[in-house]
Image 1: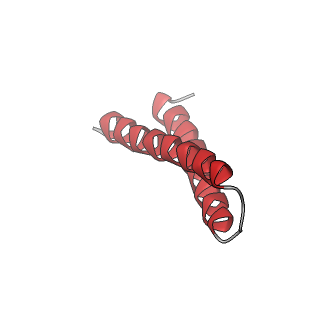
Image 2 (image 1 turned 90 degrees about the vertical axis):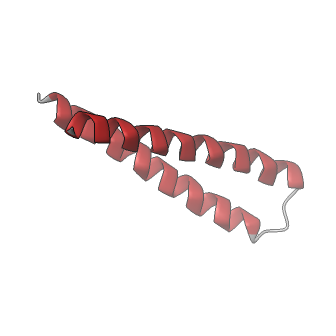
Image 3 (image 1 turned 45 degrees about the horizontal axis):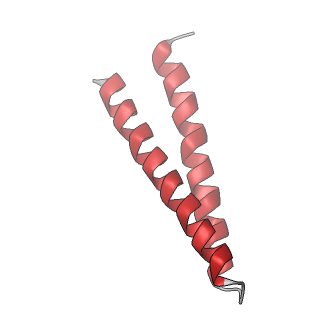
Length: 64
């Protein structure tokens, strides 16, 4: 399998996960949940945003 295709498929998964986490985070903000839960979701969301940025950068590098 072409390396670029494999990398794109991997990055697509990361971007989808980030989008789903962002939606869950936004839904949680509307609830009257414990601040600790919201804080933990914030940390997860930040991690996913970092992963998305890394995936985009790797995609840029592989595409030249």
